[in-house]
Length: 205
Image (cartoon, rainbow, N blue to C red; front, top):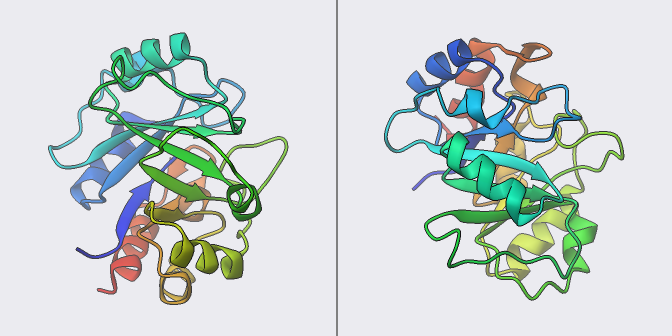
C-alpha cells in the first residue's frame, strides 16, 4: 500500500462529495467548538462517504461522554484526540470497532508515557490557540527518528502542501500524511485542484 492520505478540516457536504471522488484514505471533521473549522457531529452524520474512506472525528482532550455522543451522531470510524494527558484512556469495549489516534508534537510523543494503546500517532506542529490547520511544519528530523523507533504507525501533519509533501514522505517515511489548510482555497473551503495534487504527490503518482 502507498502512503495513507487523510484530508482534514472538511466543512461542507459539497466539499466532502468532491473530495471523496479523489479517493483519499480518510477524511477528517473537527469536533472542537473553538475551531474555525468546527462542524457539529449531527451535521457530519448527515453526510455520506463512499465505502473504504475512513471518517475521522478530531477532538481536543475529550471525555467519554463527548466522544460517545459524537461517534454515534457523526458515524466516525476513527477518534483522533489532541492535547490529552499521558494518563488519558478510553473504554475499548464501549468504543469497540473505533480506532483511536493520538495527535501531538514530535517532542510530546518522544516523552510520552501513556499506558493506553493508541492505534496510530499523528505528529503535528504546536499552536496554543489552534488544533491543526496552522500551516506550520513540525520537526521532520525528530519525526523521522520516531517513525524508526516506534512500532505504532505514524501520520505526519503540520504545514504540508502539494509542493512539499513528496519531500516530507521521502525524508520522514511516515505511514501516512494529513493535510488541512495546505489544500484550502480559503478558510473552510477546499481547493479541489490542490487536494488532487496533494494526493498524487503523497502517493508518488
